[in-house]
Length: 95
Image 1 (cartoon, rainbow, N blue to C red):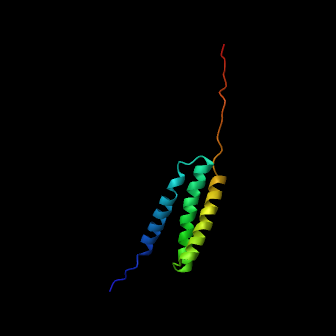
Image 2 (cartoon, rainbow, N blue to C red):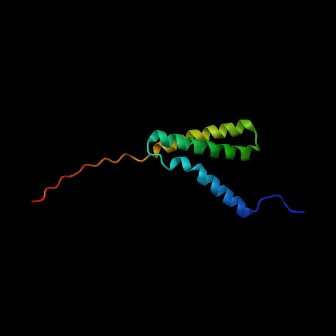
């Protein structure tokens, strides 16, 4: 009889694909507000996943870790937003 468990290599690929898709909201974010929302989404999903694994699927701890993860992700996302770059054009006169 064959095992229904997924092979280790497939699990790694699935985790990598999930992380890659979870980070997609941050690719085009440049303002602190956009970064905070994207970080909150990623942190909430990560916290919910960790909470579900750690608590065995109980709703209370899963929601609590999702809230902590979302808050942490939003704070870190807003704090790591790139600063706007302002430049001046220098006029050069050639004689």
